[in-house]
Amino acid sequence: MTPEQFERVSMHIGGTAGICWITLDRPERLNAFDWRMLVELRAALWQATFDDEVRVVVITGAGRGFCAGRDINDLRWQRGLPGNSYRSYVRTNHATFDDVENIEKPVIAAINGPCAGGGVELAVSCDFRIAAQNATFVLPEIRIGVIPASGACSRMSRLIGVERLKEMVMTGREYTAEQAGAMGLVSQVVPADALVAEAESLAVDLMKGAPRAIGLAKHVINMCEGTDPHTGRDVERLGQSWLAQSDDSWEGLSAFLEKRAPDFHG
Image (tube, rainbow, N blue to C red; front, top):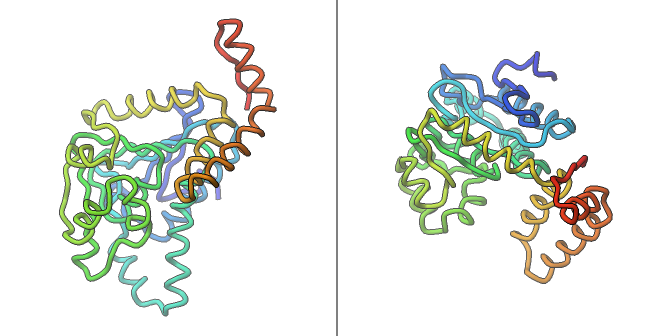
């Protein structure tokens, strides 16, 4: 599947070289997920993974919202599936968000408006989250008799703590961007008209390092988060031993000694 075939997602490398913008593109449904959007989002991520020109990925939403979560019509169809088919369907959802978390390139969520349910889970699978002041956040699943089950319960406690996560999940309350910033769910809250510029500014800073070192840093940090400190240091040493032999490592050392900007090639 190529970007020309996408119906629910748009993808372009524009603005600043090296930044790939992936836009959820169902504005009439507040960019709610259905099966096709999941497939297209995963295809876009795979293309970004294997495109050496892409250094940073930014995910945002078309229109006035980031993502309203699962499309209710899709949700009703999903509820009618037998157990094995249901689990297979949800694995696809999980695999898409896992791709966001595991791609060895930085991923920024530029949250431009309402962010609900699976939209929150998509955002927390990204490495960085910047929210417009008009953004809102809610995990409403409890009010239809289920729980958020595509990463909220497993990813968000490390961001906002167990007690705050329980509050979000068990009450279904809506939170403002400022409240999300205070609890650590997003790193920045900016005026809506500054969101794109702030995302690009962060992306530019992320492109100053050596590409392989940036990718491996993400991978190592993710691995260390789920293991004990001793194993984590083993992982760090393994990663560093590989990077230390790279051309970019030698270029970085030379540039530092020569007091010039490094010319990294990945």
